[in-house]
Amino acid sequence: MPTIRRATVLVPSLSSPIVPDLNLIFSPDFPLEERDGKAFAVRRAAEVPWSVARVDTAAEALRDVAEEVARRFGPLPDGALPESAPGDALGAYAFSFVRPSFVSPFASQREGVFFGERVVPVFGLWKDVDDATWSRAAAQLLVHRHRDLDDFVIELDAKDDERVVVARCQRPETLGAAVAEVVAAVRRSRSWRGRWFGAKPFDRSCALRIPSLDLCAIRAHEELIGKPLAGGDDGPRIGDARHAVHFRLGWDALPPIGPGPITLGRGDMYERPFVCDGPFLVVVLGAPPQDEVRLAAWIAAPEGATVGAP
Image (cartoon, rainbow, N blue to C red; front, side):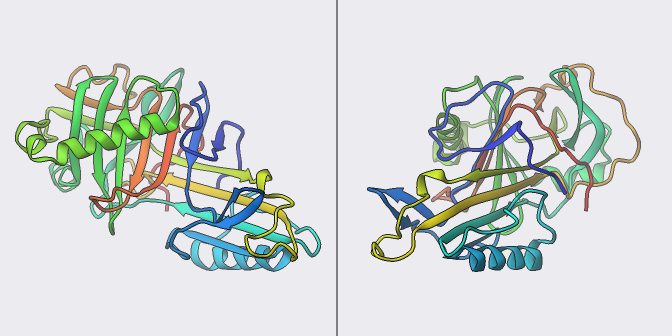
């Protein structure tokens, strides 16, 4: 189980600027937002399967979230929630565990790619993967764009109604600008013009290498502290408000068969390499055409990576 690390930050909105060497995660699952000096409930499904949220007397809310998280997801990451709650004030707590999984697992390597000056484990598909694994996993891939090594958008069809879109592009000003560019590429590819004139399907001339991720971040919603709930001006005010997000990707890949060679190049032996060996974007979307953004992550330092973890 990962611990909270400084290199990964849970940002308040998609308008947050992208910072070099910092992982940014955005999740819309917190139950309250501040407007006009009050705390308003966020209009969202009360209990999405990947998140637990409570607003109540702080001690009760904290206990309820901790117990429900333990029941549904297992032990909390170290530091995800406070050990105690502030007196009789209200507490607003949420924990989101976003871990897309795939019907057909991808291959993995412990020493998969150079990411900057580090060697990190990866999951995906490449030349050495056996035919059965390759054909089943490749059927889950949809290429939306491939311009060059540093500019591509590829979609991984996950279980249920989730889709994982992985992209490399020039570093934008904000996380939202990157997400908007990627979602637009997905929608163009889905249009009739995209179906006729879009990118070639993923085939044996391609390689996919994505760093396996196991990241956790927490945000204290300080803007809510001292605010009353909307419609409850005379009641208790919020004394603590925190959201923790645990994001895993590649955790259900097949175990690596052996150490495997380190990818010294950038996939030059392939016609179309989809190799995340530098900052990249991951967007977890809901079903089309709404394309609900369930999580967005700009990965500049893939710390805490795991391969073939249970």
